Image 1 (cartoon, rainbow, N blue to C red):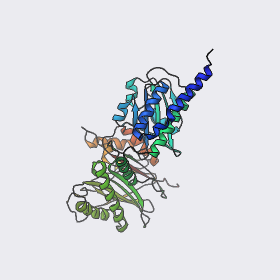
Image 2: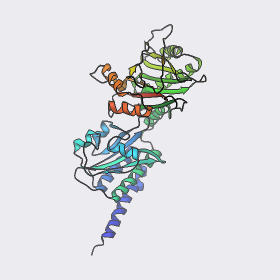
Image 3: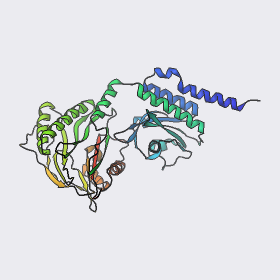
Length: 406
């Protein structure tokens, strides 16, 4: 008589050995991801397997490797934390099983077009931090077992460890490190204000020329910057880094935003010839009641105050930086920041769509922004524009003045 318990133990051992195989350690990250996904497809007898890694600045998961879902990776599909199947796994940091997939369960149309019936996904961690999601699926009805979940968690642990210990492309990783170093790792905590931000690259390389910046000044004023260097890729990111650093330096010696952008224009025209840059520099007063801002060819920010519809700030717009059109002095505008109001700055990648005038996107943005917590405003805006497949870099910065009494 066959001992089914021994057979089950042998099968568990085979599964564990397949994903802890020492030979995997000699593969680079991309090949290891592919090999792990191929093995897990065989071990779990599933039709698809995919890894989505976390982009912390965008608060999105990005399709990175797949077997049976290669189109998801080719399209660079992104999903916000909390949205759909993968987003729910990342938000709860727990496994999720779906035995009968419906349109309400997923946001990626590729999953529905394939006709997936069942899904199982687990979070990926490295050094205790969430780094992504690993999920598998079948085209037929399937009930996943507790052993299936444990195996997938083991694979996720192996993939997470690999992402820390090796690099599949040093130049690409160096470029990504540069981009991340130029964006605030966390926004400062400032009395009277709350802030949130997003950055989503529009290029497959994951780097570009859009940026945002927030810094406190010795005077007690708060500096806010958002900008866009023309082009994509490493060169734009390098130029952006120099422009960002220069503006920070000018902010320390200039009392007004217009003065800082006047100096920055000269710097860009002379040292960054051919790199057209738009930028908005705003300063919020220590009592948080007043905003001074100067705009260099950039899109006007949105202001949403309690009880009032969202509007574009009525600011003067001067030419972009680096055009060679020397202005004696750039202009600036002063506006009030009422209690509970939120100020939203953004780059054109958010509102501009091919074959559509940009005014359509701006109107959509005005409809999406309301006077609420900064993090909620950012999440609402990103969801409203559905940036799962961005075609241009996107930077978004929301600043809210606390309501009276907070």
